Length: 336
Image 1 (cartoon, one colour):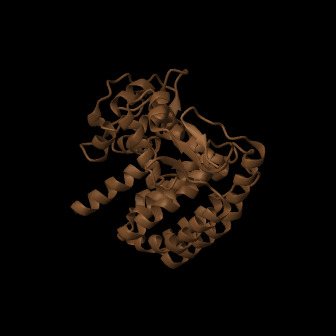
Image 2: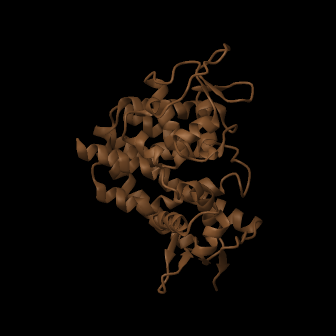
Image 3: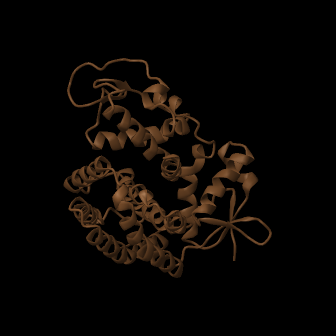
């Protein structure tokens, strides 16, 4: 039991902060700790989770799209549908759980305050080759301490986005076609195995909520935000697979997740959203097999989905490289 809690905590910590805040809010609403009609303001929720307003805003947007929250006269969001006056209640940390994930969120490490924007910049730089990153200049540019900057870079290192050279200097790892194919091969080989092993441990409610999000997104495409698209990718490829009891497989997949980061930060930047939705129906095929109890069929559907995704990602990266120039931050410099 203790191992299960540790595994869930580790899995939660790998998800972007805005998705973790979304999940905490959604769980609190489902459990009744946040009552229908409660008014939620960005600043108040950010204070509880010790975060900036940006991830809270992203979480609110996802919950609004899911029909869990509704806007209130531009001054916040209200829990649940309807038109009545909101309940102006005092929010407290206890509303978001009795420890565990909620406590971890409230004590979010400092690097999370700069991470999302930094990850996007690093992925964009990787498209244009190898770059050196000055840790001191990064800290100065972001207005944080050097340790915070180092922790953020260490997080990027765990995903294979940056690495240290022979003199222990930070560098951005170039994203060329060979690297994309190598990472893709890891995902094709291991994600279906992880899905089959995770199947007996998946909560039915979690799968149902993910399926519902996919159906709403399919009906609303292309009127979706990048955060919503990223949330659905995270549901299947990170959150659901995190139930796999084989930790070595999950560790091996961690670096291959870089491909998800590429799609998130390139889609909608290099060109408009694809005319036809890029993956939602494929995800629904996987979930339909899981609902039918067909783990083998779900694994094969996932393998097919990953296999056909590579040309799409390569195309997006090539389009980005053609239409953009490297935006060189003050803390970065091109190498070779």
